[in-house]
Image 1 (cartoon, helix red, strand yellow):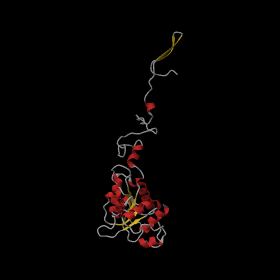
Image 2 (cartoon, helix red, strand yellow):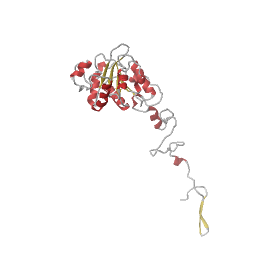
Image 3 (cartoon, rainbow, N blue to C red):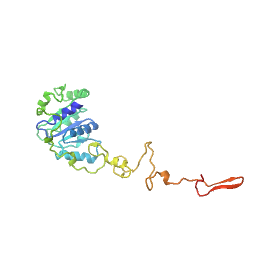
Image 4 (cartoon, helix red, strand yellow):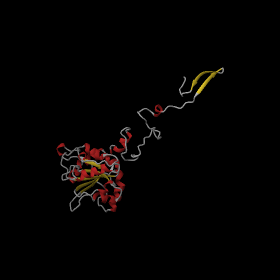
Length: 268
């Protein structure tokens, strides 16, 4: 994975690259790749099902507005993307079938423009890729073995010589995902790092009704899964707030009263 990330980061510095969509098969991979690219200096954002509606719309707006130029998306989340100026598509993980492949690569080269689509095929993706290539009658069924330093990678994608896996600071000119406002529509926040709505509820006093699963219920649970006791007044446990009921008792010895408890108080 380290060289795959490095290869992708170098490929993203190809001459003439504009808006770019990177497709992954899993939500976890989409989140990880977007975060890794940000760490390397790229203006990237993630788009996947674990994000809340506000975070997904934030990423799409930032992409359309050019505040980010790399969108890392899963197939399901990318169905609503309609951006014409996409120059490159990278399949970071091979798709499930030929229909998904066509749907992915069809995101570039729209409106009479040319586009470039690159599929990175791991060993585990080979059986799936061969079926896709056969179904679409792709001539080169066997992918070329490629590493981040392979000369043909630089030549085929027109990557400047000497390019490394971090975007030079002089080229970090886009505003980035954080410059785009995120609406409070519930669910996990941007990049999926936190579930902002559920996280606030679990914090105790600041809890409230914010959406997310169980967000409107205002419930808290203990580790055993049973509902936790409601707090009353101050933050003392319930056992200290409510007095325990006791019986009135009279003790006698040889027929004489030796002690009396008629107020519910202990005589010990």
